[in-house]
Image 1 (cartoon, rainbow, N blue to C red):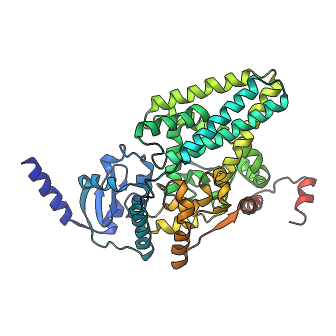
Image 2: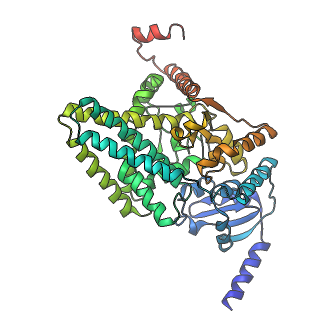
Image 3: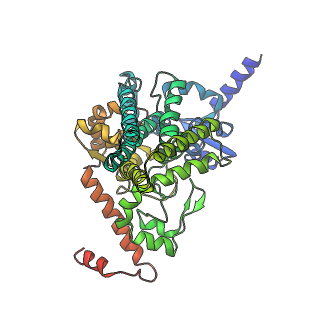
Amino acid sequence: MAMEVEKMGKAAAAERHITSDELAKHNQPSDLWISIQGKVYDVTDWLRSHPGGDIPLLSLAGQDVTDSFVAYHPPSAWRHLDRFLIGRLSDYRVSDVSKDYRRLVAEFTKLGLFERKGHVTALTLFFTCLLFIVSVYGVLFSSSPLVHLLSGGLMGFLWIQSGWIGHDSGHYRVMTSVWSTRFVQVLTGNCLAGISIAWWKRNHNAHHIAVNSLDFDPDLQHMPFFAVSSKLFNSITSYFYERKMNFDAVSRFLVSYQHWTFYPVMCVARINLFAQSVLLLLSKKKVPNRGQEIVGIMVFWVWYPFIVSFLPNWTERVAFILASFAVTGIQHIQFCLNHFSSSVYVGHPCGTDWFEKQTLGTLNIDCPPWMDWFHGGLQFQVEHHLFPRLPRCHLRKIAPFVKELCKKHNLQYSSATFWEANKLTVRTLRIAALQARQIGSPVPRNLVWEAVNTHG
């Protein structure tokens, strides 16, 4: 009897017609609807249980989210949708771009690309372990200050490689099972690098859904140190951090010199990641497996200071720490290169132009195949954003298909060499810096600044 009532309820829901205007009204945490392939779902009660966190659902609430759903969910996820079904979208339309994009996802699925992960994780884990052993050996069994400094640099490379594993595991199962993937996540992220994988997933999911939205994408919200656009001078509100990003006198001064301070700040940017991890774990926000996350972070803060303590004096200890931070700063720069110089906007991400926003907001890095290990998949940023579940070993293979689709629909497909991308990023920062200087009273300029900028 209960099953019959349930079937009748689903049948009634399937017959209910809902317009896009009505759908758009249900965009609050207490009343949240979404549409997928013309069907409307009430996911209000699912918000806190969503494995990807609440931010993706809140960012796209009241919209057609088909493309983002296809991008982030395996075929097995579709069978869970019926319990949320409340009706059908009466004015459902699919753009030609979305049709072609969904065909590509279907083709890659048929080819088994999402399931075949290659040996990338195993090789990266081996390389990470090797770096750890060599770095610790250099500290414990050498008396040379130069070796100690190099050991610090190797520790930085270790963090970079562990970061690529953490990045991959945030998008797909890098190991054969859920528990082994979770073990590798906590080991490489929390224990080895001191970064909460829960914080990383929360931050990174928000970034992917709202790439280059100045008020929704946390990867562009670096006030008061950096501003990639003069639009940030309006003190807009960050929906991720739930606070206003004030452009005050301090911010204006720091932003005015951001093209000079960019690389030095990146050398110590890891401090911010440590702080953000701790703040999330101590907050009242829902954090899956909070206990595991905290224990993993504590493991890092036991072994890393312990290793540093074996160095003979404070000069070498500080040098070791700075070397490890500076080298891993390369990875922080890599994250910035893919987006800082790309198109930005203010406002909610839109589900119906999701493909276009991903291509507009990302920049690929041209490199030969033998350098793929260095970039960790970020060299194919466009492909990664369009197919985030795809293991990075396949990104080079699918790049021609993405280029062809972009060309067909006259969409931007941006790429540059590593050095060109650095130039584009610094240029973007410099333009915003000069714009910041024109606001309010002039920023003091010394003779060195004037000499350097005389010829632009």
